Image (cartoon, rainbow, N blue to C red):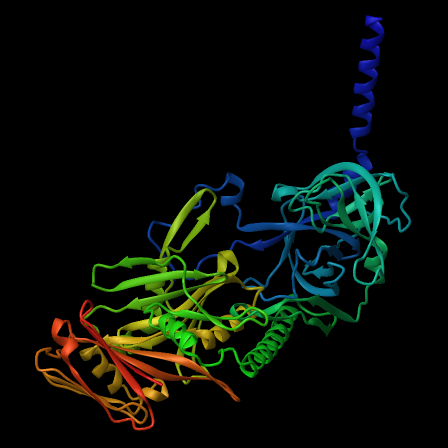
Length: 594
């Protein structure tokens, strides 16, 4: 009996070995017919600086000594014609590296120069390469009617470590979910990152599909039937997808169906530029429509003493707040949860808080800096370095984390005005190794700047529009010392309209503020008004038939003296009622208008 068990064990081992053995014909065909897909290893622009020297020492040996990054697989389907997955060679989204290559088993590299079939919906790309004098001839035959439960082989550049072959079974078919136009092949052969774009072969070595993705749970991976490759149009590159656009704080969102086409054949960089431009135009249009919807709805609840108190309390916060609305509920000003504060050695300070998908910041400049000279001579580059320092930007290479010390000059830079006439500066920096961008949007106040920043993939071009539109929903006080206010008001441009006609004149006992809407004076013989006296303008949105407008409703003066509570106030705004409140504990007098 013991001998029988041993014999059965040997037979099982031999059977397993037989099943695992890969036919030599398949090994030979994959060696000449399957390729790595590559991009050149991206390098940082010289303007980006790191706190420590840039090093690739933590990467595996092969990666740090390769001029290319392996991103997937491809295989020959005809003479000098290759197939792969569209998400491997993605020409439907913007990217900072628009050149793709293939590499054969002898490490020879060829640039992809022409796309001849493309369907984002099928996740399919067919292309040609700049082959020079070499002629590529496919070693594969095709099987458009594979049998369920047949043995299959998934071939590809698994984990970017070279072409491997792994066996399994053709397990099932799954309908394409949108219209059911074809059925995906499901298979149990192992598939790893890097396998995408490689061939799925039957037991005779014939191509039955293009490997597209692995399953996250059970080993039921996905391939596109080879029949759908040859059915795909040669005339047009097709991009079809559904994308959510939203103005996050207001919960307005839409899910447009995007359908774009471009004539084929075409160079990869031509298609990338075309589809990126189309997507950007679509994004801008949808965000404009969303903001039009936002403006048509009265987000501000009807006036009452309670709502007025709550609004004013929120808007007195020095740190910015976001106007937020969910469904039919009244709008609220959403305050930051946790605010991280950093004091710098030059007396400046940085505060930042997360509001879901983006970050809001407030930067108080050094006391001796003139805000307009700061913007003119340093501007967006210096603000970016402050954000980098405050947020602690870093880049990860292998297991090493390298802190970024400077982003340098932006790739793109421009200004715009929001619906309240506030001027915003936008800087965009390309992070080439991560194929992503940093966007910083900021506005100038007497004591520094406030703004929004975030990092997003180059594929998410619409996020740039969302970040810009959110500035219409961002509210903050304008605060500064009497000296900073005089400098700020002396600036000829880029001030909000309600500050352009305001003047401040002060003496030791009196502060006069003159403007078209608010004119008043504060007199106090016992509370000297100095260059260091702090003045804060609080502004609030107002709902009207035309949407939201913004007006200054409150002025706070902190002279730093306990005697300020005895100051006399005289308003010269006959159409506006006002009330004053003195707080001896904070040395502050507050004048509220309505």
